[in-house]
Amino acid sequence: MAGFFTKITNDIADLLFPRSCAVCDKPLAAHESSICTGCMLKLPETRLHEHKFNVMEQLFAGKTPIERAAGFFFYERHNKYARILQSIKYENRPQIGYELAALYARKLLDYGFFSGIDAVIPIPLHRSKLAIRGYNQCEYIARGFADTAGIPMLKAVIASRRHDTQTRKGIYERYLNTRGIFSVPRPADLEGQHVLVVDDVVTTGATLLSCAETLQSAVHDIKISLATLAVARLE
Image (spheres, rainbow, N blue to C red):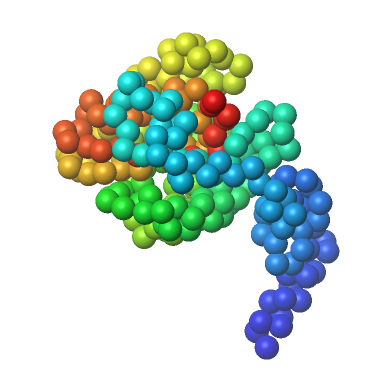
């Protein structure tokens, strides 16, 4: 009986406040959460986790030691799937990040991607930006990975200073913009650990590189892997 009333309540809520797909904006069916079935079937998945030394790993080669790296789907600014990141980051729908990360984590588990990883660390958001946005979307994404893989999520890195948005900056400008923005308050807690650093999207890799370099400078004997929801086409 409780299930019946729950269904009625959800049906009424959908009627009064219709939910829409984060990609195509069409109304969602009762069994659909944030993205409609049609859009999910056409999601431009990268399948990077299936390839050794994939293009995301190549992006960091020679810059900083990375164990492995992967992202769920390809990002193109003018593609309709870019709306997913927009919804997660700016439209108060961070739960989409959690759901997609959990879905991707289930795929990654089949390939042993989480083998040996001790903790999941989200890219932090500076407190001033957090006050404006109200949440850090990367924490939701990291939690989706962590919960599905059965690994703890740690807020082990903080944004010690604010930086300008990376949008419309060139590669070198992004590199300079992210230098020295992170710090590790308790480095001893991470000694000897293999951590998975999580961001929403990787384009030039500047933010992830800065975070990885900060961890490697602060922590003795640390291994780092990377995961994102989206990956700019890096070929």
